[in-house]
Length: 73
Image (cartoon, rainbow, N blue to C red; front, side):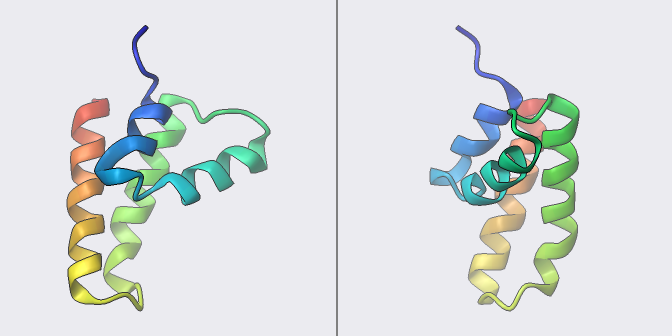
């Protein structure tokens, strides 16, 4: 069975976005749609440079966001 956009994004780079995506999903009481998943990833991509994380972790987040968005389409 084909994975959903939500499942693909959750599994990217060892689950780097799992906590954020599951929290958002829990808020809605359902898995995110493809459009919602992409919007969440775009938000993470836009806000990553302002994160207090180390530069290496920020760069990892940015690469993973771009990879997830590309894979989801």
